[in-house]
Each structure stands twice: as C-alpha cells, then as structure tokens.
Image (cartoon, rainbow, N blue to C red; front, side, top):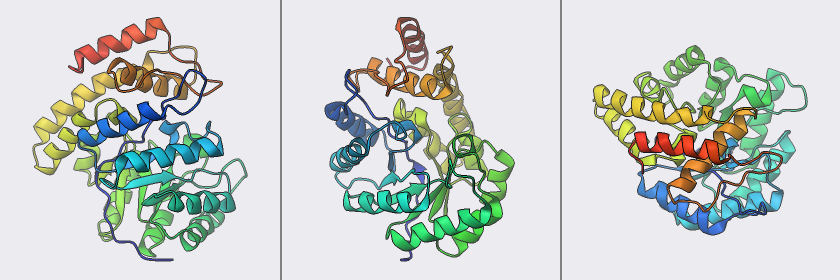
Length: 307
C-alpha cells in the first residue's frame, strides 16, 4: 500500500450518465456535462457513483463512462472512480481497471448483498488499499448497502493510511460531526458530505467538501457556496444554500416511483432543459420523467435563475 497525501476539498459532483434513447452511453452529452461542471468550478469529478447509475450499467458501459470522463477532463481536476461491487475481489478487479483507465482515486462501499460484520468490513478496505495503488475513499451509504460505517472504524483506517477520505451519505449528522472532529488530527483525510441541502452546515462543522448530486445541475451555485464558506461569509453561504435547497425540490416532483428514479430523473431532466444533455433517458427498469414532471422542474429552474 502506497501513502497518498492529496487533500480532496471543494465540490466533487457525482457525475450523472447521459443515455441515448436506446440505453447506450451518450458520449457527446457526457462530454458536454464534464465541460459544464469544470466551467462551474468543481474541484473533482466522481464517476460511477450512485448518481452515475453505476448499479445499472454493464461492465463495458462502466469502463466507457470512465474513459469519457477522464478524456473530457484532460487532467484538469482529479477523477474519482466508483468501484461499487458486492465483495472484495470484485472491488479490487474494478479498482485495478479504474487505474488503468486513468482514475486518480477509487471509491468503495462496505460489502453488500452478502451479510457482513465490522471485522470483515475492516479487512475489506485494507485488502482493497493493499491491492489497488490509488487513494481509497469509503462511501458510507447504508440505505443501499445496509450497513453503517462506524466512526471509530473509519478513523482507525484513516489513521493507518488505508483511507484517503469518506463520502458520507448516511444521513447520520451526529455521526458526521463526530467523524469531522476525529479527523481534525488527520490532516490528509478528507471528510466529504453527500448532502445537497445542508452543505453550509456541514462546512461549518469542518467538512472538507461536498459530493452533491444536485451539483450536476448547478455547479456554479455550489462553488459559490463553498467559496463563501471558505471566506467566512456564512450569510452568503446560507443564501446560496437556501436557493439550492429550493431547487432541490425537483427530487420530490415524481410520484409512484423509487427515490432513485425520482432524484436522478429530476437531475437528468433539469440538465436536458438547461441544454447540457440531449435527453433524460433512465436505465431500465426506471422510467424517464414525463411532461408533467418536466414542466414542474422547468418552473423550479426558472425560480432558481437557471433558465
């Protein structure tokens, strides 16, 4: 295992994956999206995460997405690649391929589908770090993997140089604050929130940055929020966060569908309306949002000053 000392901060959006009408990767749209995010001031790109529909893509599609993101980025910011797989050997295989394809870091969850225990979760991350010579982020997303990464375990792995950082999408704000306090003695470890609606509060609580799906739609807004927080201008940060939180209402527009389809469908629809991607096709079995939802999201974009 090689030590990695780069600190990841700022806005690192989990890049959505535009699809053609027949479900293939829409390369021109993805390239435009990467350019839009870079112009918006993001400090990194997280490819093949939940917002990228990584669980729905074939292995070939995953590799193609990463190739396109790395190519369009052209070294401007770090590219973090999701190696989201059920068990350790599969993560290692995906992480090794991610390095070959040009990723600068990888992200892994705890094992899932199979039942697991903290002892196995710890060994899982240590084995990945030993096998894949890239910085390793933990992704705490219990709603998907059905286990919570404990604060003590994460800090232990960070102190041992196993983990470079964490994306926290647990919704456990007390746990996040405890983690940020513990990480204060680990200057190379990045604590990143996956929240969209309380990034200002998390930054005030010593988060290093954010990985918000809504940053696909408005990277400029999140960049302004983070810049205001860094300057100690919490009034401006709150004003920007309030605007983004009102915009985030788009994820509640669709009814009678999963939260994943409603949220990602909203982000893709908003990007389509903003002219960044060509369409709002979703991976099967999810359905694209329809005319009623599109109209409602258009209204939210107008209210946020984005059209």
